[in-house]
Image (cartoon, rainbow, N blue to C red; front, top):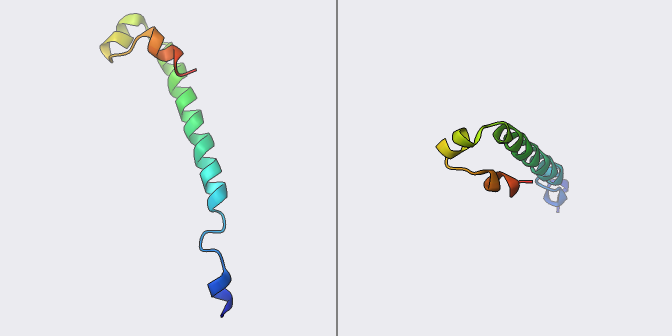
Length: 57
């Protein structure tokens, strides 16, 4: 059994998953902040309501 057989294939995969989780949460918060700045008419144009935005918090 050689050294390469015992090595992990993706040694930093856990860190990548954590990074992706926090990046996704950041993007969701950024989107929610942007949508909260829209008027009721603008939200209605894209098929959302103020109640829909309250669920994102």
